[in-house]
Structures are given as structure tokens and as C-alpha cells.
Length: 223
Image 1 (cartoon, rainbow, N blue to C red):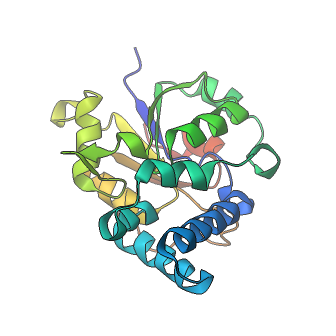
Image 2 (cartoon, helix red, strand yellow; image 1 turned 135 degrees about the horizontal axis):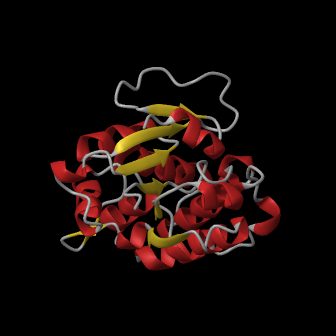
């Protein structure tokens, strides 16, 4: 019985959201901030970026400082057709079928959007457990990646906490801050080098492996 559990980030890990989807999401976020806070587009874009850097998710800044309904925000920002905007490596579903161990999604994206992306990629049959941002809550508060406390809670929920489970949980993510927190929480960490990066990102002593495609996982990850 294989005991490995693979946790995958979604955007820019399983598909290239930077190709087109992120620009749509950013634009819709800016529109939302402008409408609900009654500010100009330039100020709305500045707030969107500031809150993302400070809290790990623009939504958290809007909830904390402006009392915005998080579910309304997530719905309005991600409710658009994704099929023609998506780009991903070929044979992804086939590779997932050959990768031994259980697969889990761990993303700061909302569940409805994540489910649509996985279905379009053909990965919904392989990833049966999802931790979208709606499930990343501690004591009633949203705690998305890179919250170390939340990452530890996810390991506990999946029965992967403690020394007896060392090395079983692997997080594949394109964000170094998320991976550094995950390593502290007890994950084995693999960097999915962001699409378009000309060279591997510097630093990262907390990384076990770096891959440019998901298909490289079996070759690059030590046994």
C-alpha cells in the first residue's frame, strides 16, 4: 500500500493561470473593489495588491477592513467562462493515474472555480479531496496559505501529523512563501517553477525538489 499523499496547488501549478485567467481575475477583483468601496480603478487596483501581499488573499483585506461578504466576493470574481482561457501541459490526467498515492487539492481559490478547472483538466477523477479557501478556516476565521497553523491543521485532518507520518505529505506549489510555510508545518516541498520563468528561483533551502512540469515529479522527487 502506497502511503504517499500529494497536495497540489491549483493556479500556475496544475495549469498556467498566468497565461490568461489571472488577468481576468485581477480585473474582476479591481472592478469589485471599485464598486463596493466607491473608489477609482487606480485606487482599487492598489488596494487589491496591498491586501494580497499583506494577507495572502485580497478577500481577507476586504473582509477585515471593509466588512465585505467573502462568498459574494468569491462568486463575482470567479464567475466567468474558463475553458477558452486555460492552458496546461498535455497528458496531465494520464500522469496522475500513474502517480502512486492519494491526491488532494490545496488552494486559495474558491471551490466552484477549482472544481471547474479540475473537470476541464480531467483531474476530478483523481483528486477527490479539495481544500479550497472556504475550508481553510481556523476558529471561524479564514487562514489561507501561507498560514503555518492552517497547514498543520490540514495535516491533522488528513491523519498525516506527527513523526510517524514524516515524509508522507508532499506539497507541490508555485509559491515559495507557501512552500516555506509548508516545510515548517511538516510537508515535503516541491516547487513548480512558474510558467515563463527563465531560470529556477533563487534560495529555497526548504525545498526538496524543483520541477518545470508536473510530469517531472517522479524523476525529481527522492524516494
